[in-house]
Image (cartoon, rainbow, N blue to C red; front, side, top):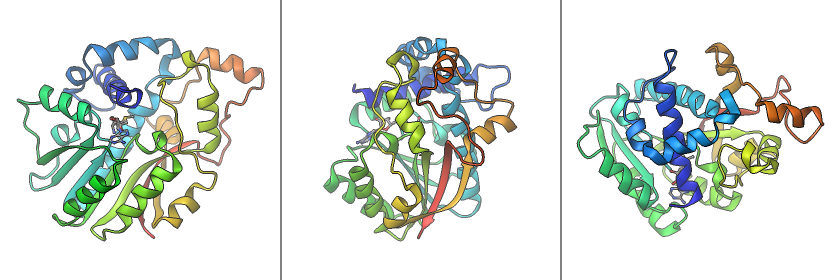
Length: 281
Ligand SMILES: C[S@@+](CC[C@H](N)C(=O)[O-])C[C@H]1O[C@@H](n2cnc3c(N)ncnc32)[C@H](O)[C@@H]1O
């Protein structure tokens, strides 16, 4: 599998680790099986980063679970998860059986997931689609088909956009905007300086190897130009503080900070990482 697909195993590994903590913020009982030895070894490899490793994956799981609970309570009928990776929400969340849930990811990730979960029963109507989201024709065909299903629909892109180029994101946002059925979109927000600093870090300080590309300077303006505006933003660090999981800077990174390298400091009131619920502009 490629470096971006690997990130799916690492995310599942972090969810498995979290699920085994006595103070777990959620339980994902299928995560360990999905992560397998690959995901477990990847988590082990970044153990030297301490609490910082997996911090954002764990807190984003908490924040996005809540966005989805709220969307479903407000009538969402279809949820399409783009770059679904090894996420197991259709199995672990209390969603209505009538909810149509569509998971999209690269073929090898989908094949692995389908094999591991063959004997598990999702709580809603689940469909899995192997597809390269950068293949414009196939993507359009899929979005057009899904948009004709029960509506309103919500689109989830968790940990996907950072790995795409601005051009790729434009294509995706424009295609989503073309379908009125997609009323909401959940995406990651990282401040551009966080992305720059992350990409400049030496390999051993990074949690994942894959390059993060999508970091427009005017994030909101970028989305607005392609049909989407912020409905609500939930700050990862604030959620961490509320949940007793503040961000703890790894020791090695602290040393770099002290040398005044280009590593972002937390500067209130700006957010450095958040999850955003977008609505049609
Ligand atoms: C960081 S993982 C996140 C997975 C999942 N959303 C989660 O939070 O656990 C990124 C996912 O995006 C998928 N992905 C990246 N580029 C893709 C593309 N062009 N087409 C389909 N999936 C893609 C990867 O295979 C991977 O599963």
